[in-house]
Image 1 (cartoon, one colour):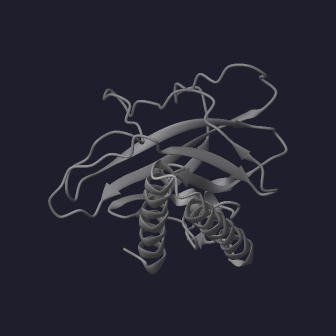
Image 2 (cartoon, one colour):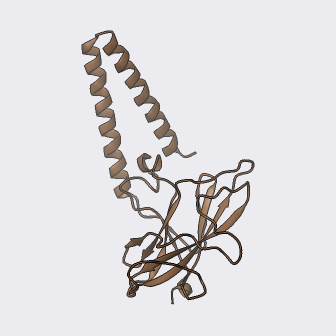
Image 3 (cartoon, one colour):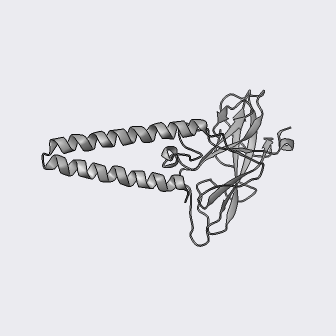
Length: 212
């Protein structure tokens, strides 16, 4: 747990405590104390929001090397590879056929020692070299005869698996890497977190030779 996580937990505890005191003060009709506590709550929330935004704007974007593992606590992902889709991949992107389809492979792993875990809100986007991001254009693909794996699938301690996702990009665009989201909350409101608002989330790059 980082200092940012500890400060967030302390802030939540402080806000909850203030809200309880405001409620008790209002029930006892102590209006002056209620207003004073309400102002304190408002000033603290405003201060926290300003610090959150300023730190997010000042932080450089985190760039991960090809194959480098990015961990959210004990749940980790790595950009294993990307390739243009061909007729054998089974990709079924619908809609405008003028684009070019790509298959991105993501390695999901756990560094936990004992517990089984999953990331139910995990999702991935493919980012091109101009910074535009694209969601998957179809469901995850099955590797060979096995079932398709999803980013949200459960895995045990030390286990790993691969997820293959199809994306459609304009023909004049080339993938640069993946942006993987572990979930919007609470990371979006943790000061200094990689996924905090309005900071740009980390980019997990692909190897250059895969983009030809």
